[in-house]
Image 1 (cartoon, rainbow, N blue to C red):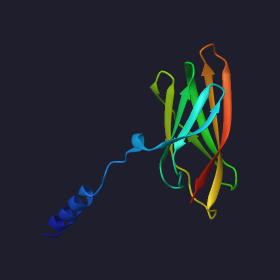
Image 2 (cartoon, rainbow, N blue to C red):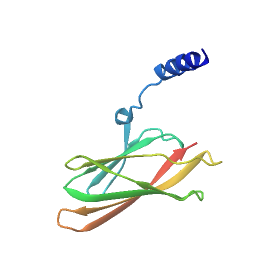
Image 3 (spheres, rainbow, N blue to C red):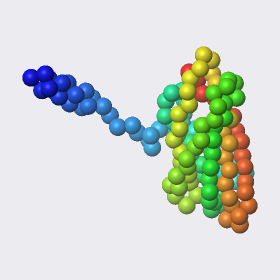
Length: 129
């Protein structure tokens, strides 16, 4: 009887869950640098998953990125970018919260151009608690 009751509660709980709609988050153009437009989820909040989208003007490869804490000592968060289209890459991430209402992280991105040249860009990202 207890197993049946626990099973019913579990089913009811799971029915209330909705899948995360990361690909449908509103995006905000954060920067336009070195042949790349950087978009980030609108209204970033610590401890919530957000997206970073890169739109390149030319074909690129080996896109890598990381977020590095600036206003506090919270380390570095690596980013794993997926190739969505020929020149578009997307990564999802999450950062921790601290006692500050607004935190600044530095977004660093590296990539190789079609002719093998390594490129780098960096931009601040504000995330609220």
